[in-house]
Length: 283
Image (cartoon, rainbow, N blue to C red; front, side, top):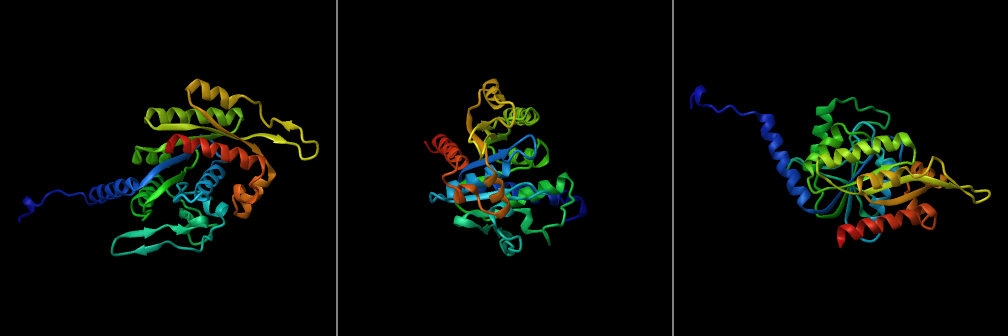
């Protein structure tokens, strides 16, 4: 074959096509894919993601959780999984295996791939998007009932990539009653609608607080914002999780609050939310 007869092949495009096929094969083995997104950081999105995953795993379902926040991964810290663990790699098959977490939860995060917890991931968009594709396509997730994807805040690279790569995913919007958070949450709702993704509903986190001294209920922020967004976009408000100091403490200690404090108001509210999600997806 002469040089003139050699086809013009872009190796990167071939690799991308192969990985896209692998993503499709992987996702076909997973019954329900749930993407947890928010427009703003600090609203408790990761707290919602890990407690949702643990709630589902606690009743015997096969569950995986993917930390899609490439530059700020917090999932394994809040699950109590050591960052010193490293995914097992099958070099021949060009596959790797997520880490086994509590309750047989399959966990994958960029935090497993950094040398130490303080090491920053200083990557531009294309590198982050390549990592997301590897987590979805090259990881051996196997057959799962649920895959929970915890995304970084905003409507940028990782969020856009996940919404494009998993067409049958279900979206949950997490917000607080704070007006600034709701402004950004509305943008993520519109983004999901533009991309024609199914929105399961809105979860309002830190929706109120019971005084530990007098027991009086206190609104931390002006109430009603999530209800208004729910009506404006015709999306169900599937949960209102109250603020409890134990919740944040358990996140730092690496134990989801639904396991540590199953009788707390937050745990009860969260279990009701999980039941609503399962009713919709498993009916």
